[in-house]
Image (tube, rainbow, N blue to C red; front, side, top):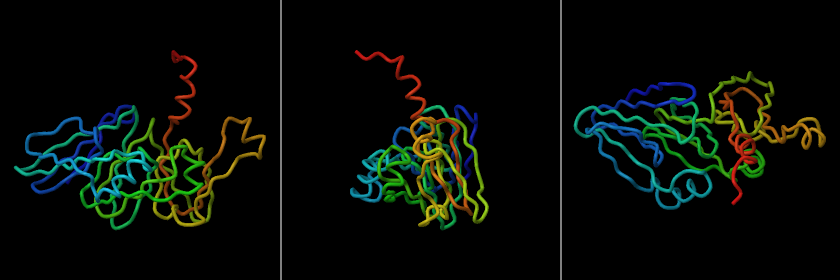
Length: 228
């Protein structure tokens, strides 16, 4: 299985090249193209309860598509629904946390489940009470709104990111006490600075930042939309 990305960072396209018998699981609607050696199967991956959890709480589709190379090698291309970048991370028995809506595609050896985020995700993402926890072995591809910027936080150091710009973070930063939601500059900064709440991470670990916030984008264009 070989994975590559073209046309970064604004209109990225993910390319998956599969050998006989290999399979990729993609979010519904993510497929751009495929060759005729691939067979597509649509189902609720992991059973109805996990599928419902990913759909209602994780911002993903109820059904997912599995593409399997059955008649020789195959090629699948995928893309996110909004302009932005793609990143591939190779999992080796570890986990990766994604904000809801970021998942695009992964190896069939990777499992995706909702992870209770409590007040962290509710105040942080503004997209619900859950984050996606991706575990297993193989590549996983996720998207962002805008380009992606990787920050590696040294051990013991703290790093602050606007909650609307957090696309993903590594397993270590998901541990208890390593990630919290806070405010910058007290109540005055919270309501008047335009920054709102921020995520504070304590290293070591990796965070993928998206250079644009979808919430801020919606707020910017809202005054120009028809209210009829």
